[in-house]
Structure formats: structure tokens, C-alpha cells
Length: 636
Image (cartoon, one colour):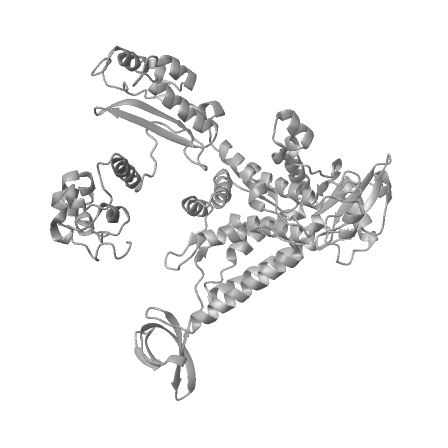
């Protein structure tokens, strides 16, 4: 972590130019004059790993030279070893403060900064990945403006980079957080932050390969174009396809407030949670992807969060309850000692606790202090370390430029793009509506149906129907199907296609039964916002409690027809329901969960879960159930 500040954080003393000259001649070969007409002996930047000098190549091209300090590799590796030892000691003393994944990730990636050949390759790779989204290229390819990325890079000079020396084209610019220069050139600070964030969103979610060090010292603003210039690709991170996909899922789930998708994505990136510690995963995710604010607002919000936390901790410490883990002060002949225990019960001024050795004691209330809460996170994944670091540095950049930024608004389109390309079929296949290939829609051709319906059955039972069929082909292949003078099958198909095209529906399955036989069987679209595979006939969807909506709609339809009165007792329509004191329960109370039957059948279903598939058995359970509360008294 001491080496997180890279090249252009220019606050360290420079090495003598004599050392730099000797390094250049050793690394590049020959005398320095053979490569450069001039090298400025005074560096323009200096940091822990290297320093930078302006220079002019033979032939007149303006360049900069990044020259590595001597003996830096040995010092860096020793510091990492010391840090590992220190973190191991902390982990042994306080298991909840295990920073070993952080150190492990840094130890794996940071030594790569010492090889400038690798840095040159990294920069060229990132530049190549983003090239098609430069505004001119994006427009030619039909990419929306919201996805175009207007950033640039210095050019690596072929033949002039080695393990310890890197020569790049000189760009006349200034540091991105130089407010005076930004104002002088009337630079659009919001646009600069926006395009830098887009560049990193594409690197992380689409490419899975990104620079892990976007601090302000590694970003310039070109004086001429006022475009951001990205520098220093020594510290990079590459994500495997699985991790990149789950980072994209994580971002989209946060944006859509999808708790199920969020938990799946956290598990996918390797974040392990302790099941015994209460935890709001959505709150954590919203904190990570919170909007970046100006410095003053960000500082005020941070102070408020800390104050709120201190207040909650102090409030919690004033109360203890049975089951709480506590520190207990015990007085003895040799003074006071602290032991850990668990509260058994709380009395008037006294607390009974069970110590870790099994001994039970009754102690004064002021001798008991609530233990600090355990971290709900059992293990941070290595891949999360630099991902979180990049978000933090981008947030710091936004604050430094005194602008605001919604990371979700900027990054989510790239996350969605990543999900669409993850093992996904082509767009045409994703938007296909298919008729059932495995069996005729209505059984044997002509069975139970008039002639026109028999044509439908024959059409969809042919081998050609086994392949994905565009909607227009389905409509042609299924002519003459109508109910009440309406081409009902064609209408449903067109409606489904319209909903998918407009993205009002991601995907769906449609089945219509007539006299117990399926006469419509369609499916199309994608499985979910995170799984862009096409919906198939046998795709499974979570339908938990979906019957509630169906039943409620059916009951309300009967109410509209005047066949059911909401204020009437259920027993009026189902006499057996009147047993066990349920004769006064109304239809409205049942629909509003006020019948006192929330737990009806739990014991029976615990013994035999498959009773839910037996309609007669379920009716009997409800008919003999006893209300737990007076009907209408409360909602359960």
C-alpha cells in the first residue's frame, strides 16, 4: 500500500542525473547521445519507483523518459514481506481484522510495476481495447454517444523500452486536479470525470483488464484538446470471465435494487458472509457505488456517517439482552480482570452471564459491556481489492475536481454490455419466439379441434419447427387460428414480440389451455438481466407466491360480476369453512391476511410437503384450521 502512489505523484527527492544517464546507457545500449539530442537533467516528476525527464529524440521528436530508481525492487519486496508479517500478527490477535487478502493481492500485482516492458504492453492493450469507442469510431460503428469514450494515451516509442526504462511521446498537458489550469483553459470538468469513469467501466466490465491506479497524478488534461490523458499502466488487474461477469451482475443488481441478484453476484465474486451476523448486503453495495460528491459535501456526509455510527454504538452499549456476547469485569484478590461471556438473563441492576469456561455468574449491570460487533464479512475476495480501490480513486478524483458523479448512471451501460456478451447468443436468436417443437401444441393433429386448429397442430409438429423461428414465420405457419373472430395465437405472438422489442419484458413463457389441452405454447426473450441466454420451453422461473396474484385476480373478477360479495362470510360460498369458529370470517378479511390463518397447515406441510399438490387435502386443512387471532383484529 505504501507504493500505491506511482510515477507522477512528484513529492519525492530525485536521484542524481548521473545515475539516470548511466541507467539509460546501460538499458538502451550505447551512449546517450545516440538516442537523444537532449535530456533535461531536472525531472518533471519523481515518485517511489521512478522519475520522469523530458527529452528530445534524435530527429527532433519530443518525448519523456521514465527511469526506474536503483535498488527499488529490493526495498519494495522487503517492505511487502514486512507488511505480510505485520498483518499476520494482527490476524492472530484479532481474527476479525484479517487483511491478508489485501496484502496477498498487492504482493502478487505490485512487483509487475518494476518491469516497464510489461507496462508498455499493458498500456497498448488498454488503448487497443478502447480504440473502437473513440467518438469518431463509435459514430461510424453506430455506438450510442453515451458509450463513446474520449480519452487518449501517450505513444510508446518502439525500441526504447526495457525492464527499467520507458520512453513515450510527450503530451503538453497539466495534472487533472490542477484547478487553476482547468479554469484557465475553461475545461469541462464534468465531461473529463465522465469520460475517465467510462474508460474504467469499459476496462473492468467489458475487457476484464484495467489499470488499478487512477489517482490524479496518473491523469493529465491535454492543453490543446482538453481530453483526459491516461498514464502509468504498471499496476493492472486482469479478471477471469466468471469474476468479470459477476462484477457486472453486482452493478446491475444494485441499480435495479435486486436483492436476490445482489447476493448471487456477491457470492460469484467470492465475498463470503457470516450467516450468524446480521448484515444488510444492499446497504454495503449502495455504499460502494454511492454517488461521488464535491469535497465539501463528501466531507460533511462522511462526518455525519461517523457521528451516526458512534451514536448507534453508544445506544447499543446501554442495553444488553439475553443472548448478547459481552465483556465481563470480575473483581478478585489480584484486582479486576476481563472475561468474555454470554448473557443468560437481565434483572433489575444485575445480569447473569455464562463465561466461556462454562461458569455462570450474576454480576452488576455496570460490570458488563457489549462486545464490539463481529464483521459480517468472513472473507474478502482478492479480486475485490483493486476493484474497490479504483472506485475509491475515481470518487477522489470527482471530489478533487469539485463535481458530482453518479457511478451507477455512467457504469451500468457497460455492465449491461458485458452481460449481453457473456456466453450469449446473437441478438436475432435472443429475440426469437418459438412454437413448441417437442410435441404438437394440441396433441394429435385434429384431435378435439376444428379443421383450422388441425392446421396449426400439423404446422408446429413438423421437423422444421424444431429450429428457432422468427415471429413472422410463426404467424405465417399458424394461419386461421381464431377465437371469437380474432387471430388469437397471432395476437399473443405479436404482443410478446412487441414487449420484448420494447424491453418492457426481458423474457416470458406463454401457455393457454383449452379443455385441458394447450392451444398456445410460446416463449422468447432472455432469462434475466444477468443471464442473457434465450428463454426456452423448459426454462424454469421462480414462481413463489404467484398463485396469490392469480387467485386474487379471479376473486376480484367474480366480485365485478356480482357473484361474490367481499363483505360476505366465506362460509356463504363454502359451508365447510365455518368450522372451528370461522363462520364470521369474510372474503375481504381473507384477501387482506386478517383471517388469523397465517400459520394454517404448517404442521401438516412439515410432515408432508407434497400436500400442496393435493387440492382436496389443502381444502380439508383450511376447513379444520382454527384462527390464531380474532378475525379482522390485525394483519398477519
